[in-house]
Length: 325
Ligand code: PBG
Image 1 (cartoon, rainbow, N blue to C red):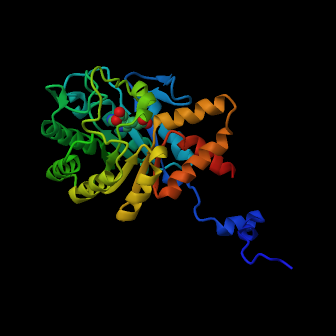
Image 2: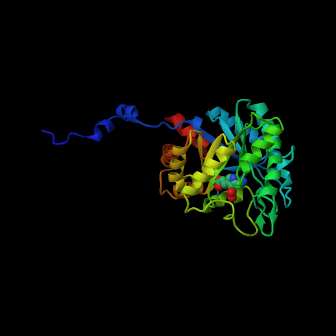
Image 3: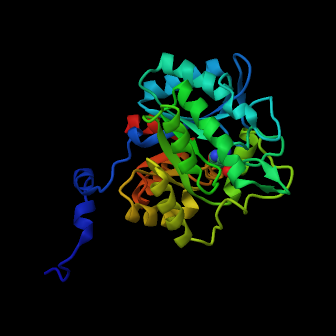
């Protein structure tokens, strides 16, 4: 006679039972694939610290978008990596800028693709900071005025989502006001709401050419020790008009994703950032972990924590793995 009444293993016995009891199914619908756009034509330059990722020219960005579409990926986020930089980052609101051109070209080639554009200045400034620097610090309100210009330029190019990422106070409100004032009431805001001052952005700074030549970002990005503060940031962004809120990075911040999920009914996004991708790739290259399983387990865990949407460099390979089943 069995002494145990409760045997959770009963539901793990066969794949059929496991599938019936599964709480979450990872789907390609949930991914946003990041693309770094550089000047030129026919350029596809590997990014050393992000194996399998590339800096691409506009025409190659279109090729990436088509590949994503063929894999079922519905959304992209783009970052511009321009030659032309100045101390305020004015190239970010150039209507003929790289992401603006890429948006128009992708819209033509893949009309259904959701296009999000990172709205920040660090790729566009000579000093690599996320706005106008005064007395060694980023001037919040002066930066907001320029951010409005960026948002309008991105909406004009056809972006579905403007994604302000600079962690300036009032940045969502500034983008919403600018967009509405220019007649872009339909353009949405994906807010980098709880963005931490993290070392896990290391490889991105190579990819986007944004190594700061002085200081750090702790004056505007959040302290990794803080959780309650993320709820305040999220609440402010929602009050200012965010359509989606984001937590970034993802893996060391799964608790934050979970807490944010509990306080909003808006879609919650999480950014599986460059350093997270690089760590997985490095361990897999050495044969220390099973690459494919690590990719799917990572993405599933980010979803399980409460993210509806995952921005990830793994999007294409994960789409292929999900297709293989
Ligand atoms: C700012 C921005 C950064 C990332 C996305 N948007 C860099 C930063 O804040 O330093 C990082 C993304 C990643 O690491 O994958 N434009």
